[in-house]
Image 1 (cartoon, rainbow, N blue to C red):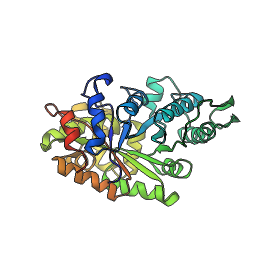
Image 2 (cartoon, rainbow, N blue to C red):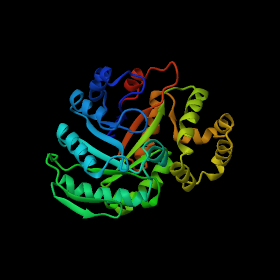
Image 3 (cartoon, rainbow, N blue to C red):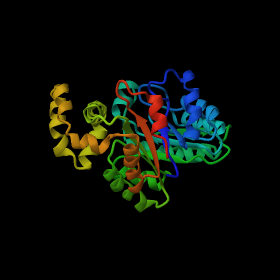
Image 4 (cartoon, helix red, strand yellow):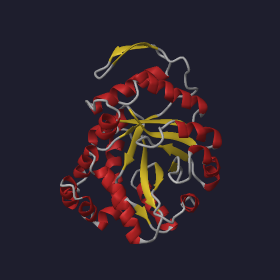
Length: 321
């Protein structure tokens, strides 16, 4: 694989200040990319700023910065600052995030998400190019902003996308798409939509890896991880669109009724096995390769280690061979 990424910081490797050694080792292990996330732990940019110094060989990406939780100008400033810290090595991933993160946690209306992403891309293109921006977009207005600290090279903008509307936007106005919580077969379907609009689009996929060959353990970890996402409205709609209404219908019914234990048990093994990568290191690498065969250009591992499995050891064992 030309690109092979991993999500940073590592969940069980201690505070950010204690992760320098493992992050510095990533290039020698065969990783080419470090991608952050932003939900309820670290923000999306601080871990990448540290990684830019600790592992200057790596390409850095944020997956993703929500377009609702930062103002347009602040988002441009933050992206430009990181692009200066890692010249030519930074990729900005933006997206709607979810109504849970935007409304419940950040007290901001989750209003017209497709339009907000489109408007943000258009603003960022102008701002990151050094233009003075004054304009009324459909979802916000900017008056007289000019970025004084420009990125030394153009910053690729990728868009977190689930269903056709956002996937086509990612391809037409962005430089590609960031995928999440889908199977290798799903990746083929989604990638086709992107490539129909832009054959050269980059497609990044965060792939959840449970590094154990114990099926019961992997499925238990996978069910808990999946439940946290597939009940968020945007992801529920995504999996309904993918055709999982029948296989996940009982899970959603029990979840909505408050029966969390029953809901977890109602997620079929085959759904977990499709979406969670688990097995020996070689088996996991083979499963990652299926995503690449189905159109993903940059697989991005996200480790979900069960108790007793060292995340530090898993990083080394799952590296490219």
